[in-house]
Image 1 (cartoon, rainbow, N blue to C red):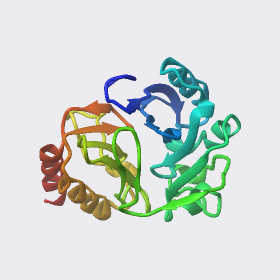
Image 2: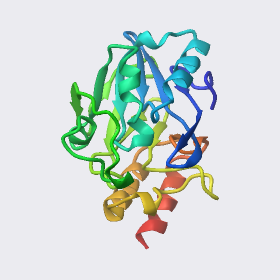
Image 3: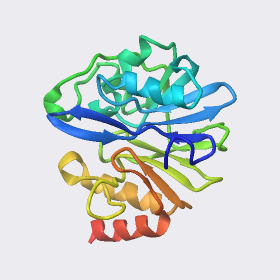
Length: 227
């Protein structure tokens, strides 16, 4: 999946250095009647790459009106403050993630190292739907990797933006969350089970990008994790 493969939804792969490692991360952007919804922003230092991707799509970063944070890990939202220096956008995340994003609590991973906190304007809950040009984008609560982790589902196309509830940078085309980065593996496994019950045809992971795999593979992952 590149910038143009999915109508209304675009993957934005970015090479970054985070935690002493070179990573390829995949934020995404969704077109709406109001402008763009940005799903995660990457760590500090990623904003120029985000802006370049948007320019390639024919947009400016100022076209972003909403930023949805799947969770509070620094590789996903550490660059929020820098992005907000360039655009006046609404920041949304699950209500259980909001205290970490706005700085009321230290991040639960990364040794408590904290990025610049930002205000959370909108607290999301499971089942909330946001209208987009790709059809409704539904918030699916997938806790475990963090307390309020969310994924985003486009039911009309069967596209799942998994966040870190699933990953695609391992040996298998699609895998469950990495245990070493998942404090509550029981809840994370339950979340994989919830995703397996949804009608998913293809998946976009923050770590690993686009995978042509959906509900059947997610059900296999769930069976592996719970046994």
